Image (cartoon, rainbow, N blue to C red):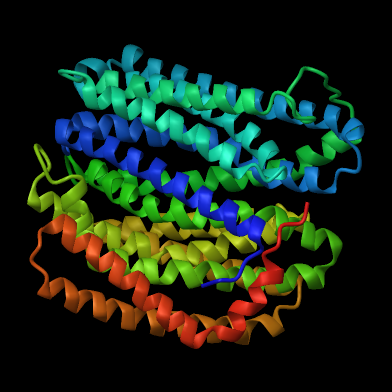
Amino acid sequence: MIILSKKLASMFSTVLILTIIMQLLSVLRTSELASHFGTTSQMDAMNLANLMMVCIINIGGASISVVIIPFLASMKTVREGKKVLNTYVITILGISYVLLILSFVAGFVLVEIFSLKEMNSFYYMLYLMMFIMGVGQFFRMISWIQTAYLQMDSRFVTIKLGGLIAALASYIYILLKQNLTIYEAAIAIMISFFIECVFLFLANRNHDYKLDFNYDFKSKEYRQLMKLTVPVMLNAMVYQFIILIPNFAGGYFGEGYISMMTYANQIANIFQTLIVLNVLAMLYPTLSRAFTKSVNEGIQKLGKFINLSNMIVIPVVIGAIILGPNIIKLLFQRGSFTAESTLLVWYFVIFLVLSLPFIVIRELIFKTFYSLGDTKTPVTNSIIGMVFQIVFLLVGIFKLGIVTLVISPLIISSLSTVLAWISLKRKIDLQEMNKPIFKQHCIYIMNSFVMGCVVYFCLGWMSFGVLLDTVLCIFIGIVCYGLLTLVTHQVYIKQMKNILRIRR
């Protein structure tokens, strides 16, 4: 058990509980949708439209945490920075709004003028879904801005409460609505983003950094922020293409594959949101402040944060692979969702969760570049990754078939992580980090493998039903890995007490 400062331990526990509840509601909502629509073209249309709108909004939204948090961390006084901050936020919102409008116009032209509506009803459904989900994603972006401000005050619990209320509202509607249509489901999700946006806006109403229309586009600081933002947006654009490409390729293999990939992502996102995103959100401000003080302190914390994150992530990966079929059965296998769909979704889940440890390292490295004021290197890394993925998919689809889509997340994430690590080594000296990180990760893998064997054999002996078997195996896995960690990491765990203390 990691010894943390009391404040951080209490906050992390509360955030973790709220996140678990929020993820549970999100998964239950997806489960209801799966029972209604399964792997039909309707679900394909909503999932693809949502993914497209998420990608568009993420182009502008990526700069919010990457640029705003370091700016707030280094800002000397509120008065000096407030006008710059407001000008920057207005610009980012404006760019995202224009991108959404352009996407809606492009959809209208394709559907109405080029008559795609008559050619295939799927395209018309996709267009309508784009509009609904796009509005929701714009509200979500405003929530990100409020979240960045609240994170600087360590108000992580407030942030999670907003998401929890929104998830609960959409789930209740989808659960209780009789004869639910796919459009009603999409509107419910859109409204949930609006609810979250309003909640966070009200929570932030007395904050010194709250948004107003006090701006100065001629400010040198504003121009400097925009110089940092352009590479971040390019990086985000490339990264979103990397996400979209497999989903468009999924449509090549026929109806249902886009939805299968979405369901698999839902499973992987449970663990990614619960652990990876929560940990990174809490560690990034501390990492940014550390590099602001000195490079050596930043390097020390980077190494500790990589080890800490993957000490949690690696056993989760092993557990998710072993218990994957049970989890998918519990969540989705009913109604239009068949046993065959469960098996295919599990294949996608395996390689998605295997990529999580690489994603942790890559994201911490990228955040290190951002903390050092370098927003260009991550762009180069992402462009190389995108080119490789395009080539890999083009060749693989014809040579390996659907296997290409299954293994691509692991291939791309591992490649981009290696490239990011090499790039960071050229910028700062990481020599002292290599051996400790390698050693710690070998121990994590060994402990996780032992835990996985115990869970696998226990699962084979149990016959209490899918739900109880899964719950008992999760408990056994946690206890087993916890004991192994106490035995192998006594000295290392004690060191985390000072590393993880939040500095305000």
